[in-house]
Length: 77
Image (cartoon, rainbow, N blue to C red; front, side):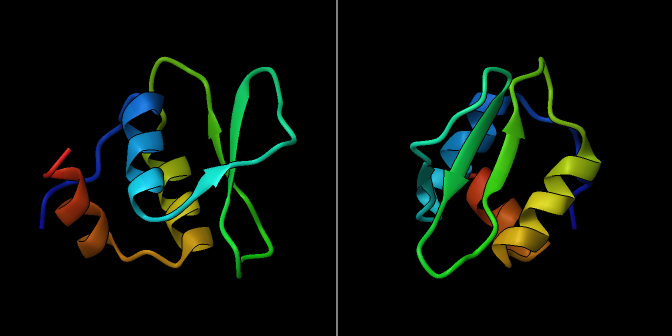
């Protein structure tokens, strides 16, 4: 399995959009908030130069996405 590395926020947004997540109407200045029907918690992506591995893992847990699925989709982006 590949190693989880920090990624740019735009690439992570593309990943979550491909997984069916959309931007929330509520917004923050320095964070991107995404929602999906059937999930009570949003995925929050900080608008930093890179998103660290710990936040990627946390968002994957919130979205109930496995690391295998993550690597498969990210390899196609």
